[in-house]
Length: 139
Image (cartoon, rainbow, N blue to C red; front, side, top):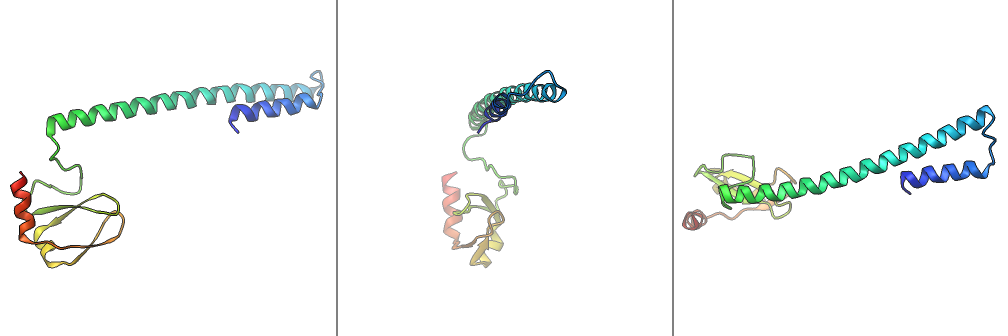
């Protein structure tokens, strides 16, 4: 039930009680019902504005992503975890959560499993020198 529906329900209950609006209590209840109606209309307007702003922000986000792709290309790392331009850093994607994991090449050679810092899943790591060569050939 929306806020407007609840306010209308309360107003209907008051109308059904046949309150005398000439008494102090009746005046109070009538004023409260009017206030509830005004507040519910204001909330409905705010919800509409928020929905419109959310749509606008989504459009801006899409446009900004296109500009970033045009300026920086698709090869840029979107993570803020490290300087992925460093040649000794290997960038992995967690299959569970999709987050970028940046690991020093020397650390990667010595481990068989790696814990994702985002979701905590243990990942099996198989890294060979060929993996690095393949990445360099793609550039």
